[in-house]
Amino acid sequence: EVQLVESGGGLVQPGGSLRLSCAASGFTFSSYWMSWVRQAPGKGLEWVANIKQDGSEKYYVDSVKGRFTISRDNAKNSLYLQMNSLRAEDTAVYYCARVNDFWSDEMAHYYYYMDVWGKGTTVTVSS
Amino acid sequence: DIQMTQSPSSVSASVGDRVTITCQASQGISSWLAWYQQKPGKAPKLLIYAASSLQSGVPSRFSGSGSGTDFTLTISSLQPEDFATYYCQQANSFQFTFGPGTKVDIK
Image (tube, rainbow over all chains, first blue to last red; front, side):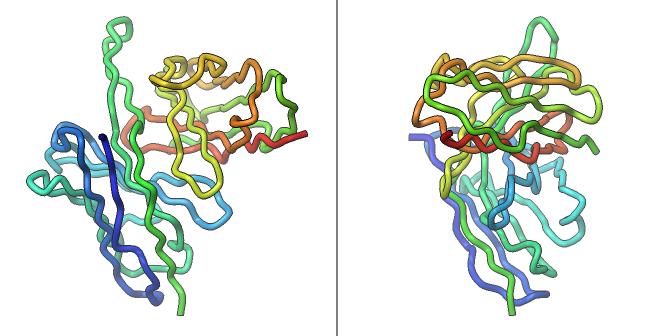
């Protein structure tokens, strides 16, 4: 069964740090881009970061640049999100997601989409 | 950065109704658009990718259309299990963006 399981969430004080993990199983982890997406209480979805299969490319939403770092360990089938200088507005459920692709012969390019999601881990930033 | 808008922000509908949700990108994104369904307390679920391709296992009453800047998600005959929030998401580059969501609730 294809599965993603997040862990590492919890309560942290403003300015503190936390490291989230996402364990992948049931698919060849090293073949996929991976994402982190978050959802603040009562709010919509916000994409946070993407990482390429070999970790050579990383992208971040502006609000976390310089504070969060996405990484992966393909030998351990694991994705990580190191979160530093946490703020109250980082309070959210954090989901990891697999980025799948679809080749279009007509358009001669790939389409990307997040097709497998974990159940999420909750991060609360509060004093 | 590419911004996404959705309308309406919420819609009240009855079982059997046809429901249409629109999504607009701030610049052209070809067909790099996906739609997700989310129920309270649950992870999002992929419905549509590449603007109009139905994800495996998703009922055929869901359909997507559009390209460039304007996109539509249609539920042809609303079922009880379809009451949820729907999000569009662009993947024109690896800087993804979600729309703000459309909540479909019971009339």
